[in-house]
Length: 408
Image 1 (cartoon, rainbow, N blue to C red):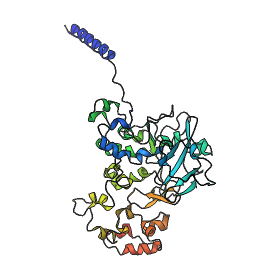
Image 2 (cartoon, one colour; image 1 turned 90 degrees about the vertical axis):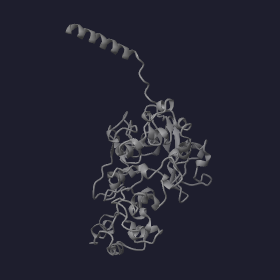
Image 3 (spheres, rainbow, N blue to C red; image 1 turned 180 degrees about the horizontal axis):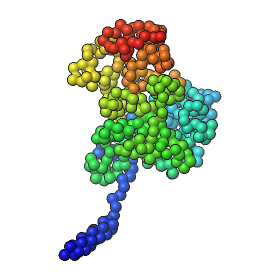
Image 4 (cartoon, one colour; image 1 turned 180 degrees about the vertical axis):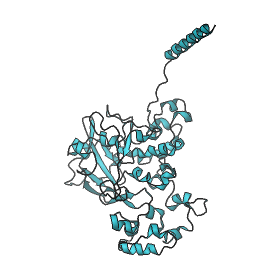
């Protein structure tokens, strides 16, 4: 009897296996483009469309308004004309110009300083970025595919050298959307807000960080972005952040391991108390809106006081008013939270700096010892570190052990 049961079970299992094998496999989700999101998410789409994320690279023939530089006056730095430009890149601090040769794009050797409205040379020098020794000395030996395009597009294919979509489209942060477009459910699309804080932040850190791929090369080429990573996965399985060392100051870092250059917000942020308290980049930034500078969810101190207000049951809340905390007049530049906790010390181009994201207060003593710029003398440019340290020593509302170490 037992033998018969085993034979019947074997027949059932074999039949089931054959039936399952004969069924068509569910098609793997693929990329369908941001426009596919618009019918159901019209308001979010319209907001995103105005952001710099949606407009990282643009074809000047399609978007002549995207060109910010002066091409009407001769300049010895400018060895190309606008007709040579396939893409303009950037619009906030600098604008660079990509030309297409064969199936690759290359950055022209001049860039436009948006704030100062002038031309600057563009060339990544030896001893700066880690990848420089693996490429030729000329800009035209450094294709943007392995060095830029993976972060300026959705699903850049290193074999075909084509993306699913140029710019930071919806699927860059939500993953391939074909299944969701066909049958919209919460389960068949990535929503970073529902991920754990590590994977949620990885959505942004994949591009807002300096690092290297775990696989050294792909097809013999070195890539400066995490090839193969998709949102929802662990970025650490594809990418390692640049190794920072205390006490060293170089192209990437200051001696306290605060970033020295732009595009290292992730390297900063993971050092912060904010990150260890499991905040996500999008708790402060809304990539679907261009209403506020840097796509912030609120302007000025209003953003920080959503969590750090004195009337909140939060150990990190203020113990008094903002001006009592900052020792500066209410509403003044020095009374802005970011003035002390996010100083503009990370260089994007010569003379242009962006905010640090460690949220640490950098003391005058640290400046004196290690050369890390502190926010006091960045604002009070006519004063020195000794003056700043003496001022901090009078602040009885904060710990002297943290804020006012004596200068040696």
